[in-house]
Length: 304
Image (cartoon, rainbow, N blue to C red; front, top):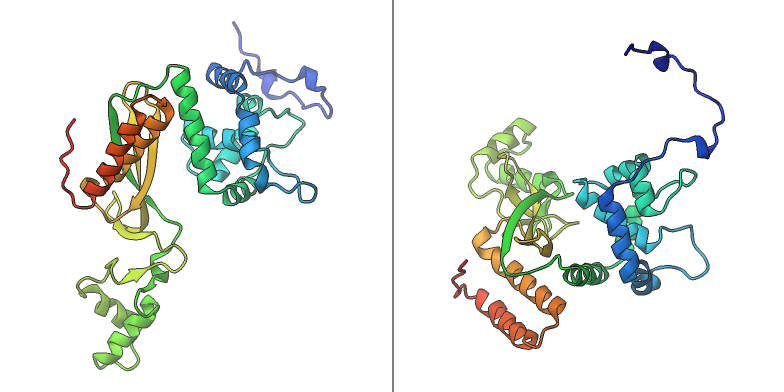
């Protein structure tokens, strides 16, 4: 078989019918997922609980709730950590266009639309959709909930260290250093003098003293690469038999795993009780309440 060099020199046509475009066979996973969603009425469900976030008559064209939540799932399945990445991937992939229900003639939602939609739909509604998906997984035999694994990761917050302020006075970090320099006898400190003064100062990055004015939940924490940033800690609870995520909690990034795992375990147990709807669910929920109370005193020993 010879190589045809003309394939790279072929001049593109100005007009081409959509019926002549190359078609993707689609990915079996996304095709099966859409079949499950259709069988359980996913789009009807999310439209019902998200209706209050949409204007009835006026406003710019919006992304339907079913499309929005599918795009979040794409971000998880494809390992995309940004809304820009989700935007590009969905616009570029024939398979994902089919999953979202968008033809080649229609533009998929851009990253700013995803961001605005996420900001308007509250956390409680996102959690309600999460619980609905867990119930579907249970009905489809994809959730057992007998052995749960907990994993945590530290994520850098969208907050710069240089803009942190004092918790007591609201004073910025630079102004605080200048005040220290003047108190030590340097009336007009240079940047180099401030750096030397800050370098050897003990406890300079204490979460008890400092916070970020626009993200008070972020904490000063050391990342895996050794650098220090404002960060959040995310913990996942996973069904070890099916790999389904059964709970997710956001914790303070400066706390160790042994102190944050209790909240995640309790959240996972609560979700599983709600999904199963078993007769013993009420007693299990009572145990969860006791668990939540005891974890504050650390009077619990976790066993496998």
